[in-house]
Length: 523
Image (cartoon, rainbow, N blue to C red; front, side, top):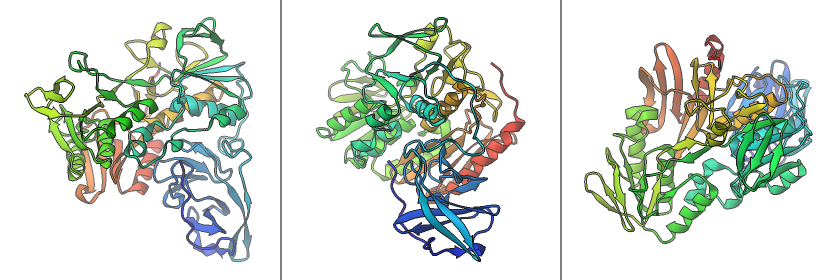
């Protein structure tokens, strides 16, 4: 849920000297009680809302690239000319204001609200176009990040045909990243969690079929059969089934009391147990495990983390940053049991492979996820447990697209086929897939991005590095002011930062500029 940036800076309705803004500059100010961003591009001046419509990030502290403003917190993008949210995780547009030059002053005038406060108007430059595709209907399997973003994008691009979203989760669509962060910690009320109201889907004629799963795909007949026996025909189909948590073997969790965190129902169940628990064992030092640990510490629980790694997140961020993350958690009272696995779990204790017994009223496992490719596999779209898509996110079946955790796509930056299990990537793929359903022929070439929150420490990460030759760290980890570049040869694969939002944005732009030099992997 976005929060309004506090009003500060000059009164833009009174005007500011034109000399105060060079080409490419942004200035935070206000018009009345509205926080407004004033920006200059060439000889033109633009004014729009100063707060990101995702979580309220201060856009003036972001980066202006052409006519697009990038949020410093989670890299959402807004078009200055139209106010549209042109890149997730922000979905809602910005209000704009008229701007005029009066002699040496630049004066901000009348406010222009978006035509649709949820979707905005037609996309502006450089994406303004008439799309050629017009499928008779679109069915989306999965109401997560990719599926929800795709449905919204179809409507924003002007598609007026039937859109149906199918998902077994009765609570979807909602803000999944918050489930292990502020919501679990008790800092965000549940009304912040839904991505949209039910009225939004009704008003935009998006048919939500929740609580029922897709059982079978017939790509020849272009039909989806649901578990309740009904079926849906489609002109185009998006498979966005996401992932499910990897689970401990039944021989380890004989009591069946281990909790997993993927859905809103899961998070609610964990929160309910915290009222009766004093000590929790978190199995796994993944992002989800560590974020869960931080949130449960915020609720006052005694937290122990068990993981086989030598350092948390070592496989993703390397040993040095892993040790730093461990130190952050230890400074908040978390105890680590690293290099250890779980042998058994009973009603009271977690027994480790070295015989250590941990008392635990609550046990939560965060040991990874597995893409839900079963439906696509049964339809003959999966090879070696991978659902591969083209650079346009289309599967081998015409008119069938895939996005999110399940999609292996050709990444032009690395020249390899990758898949990424992160929220923002899924949203952006859903947006791109929607445009391609409508005939845009748009390559998905966004640089992957994610963020991870640990108490008051937030790590941002752009790019994708499954392996690297070295990690070059600039700055001081202990002061929480650093940048880490993951390099293979002379190529920078990914950049992680803390306290350096601008540099994270600039690294993203640099990677976008370099991707044209890398060969595409063909399907």
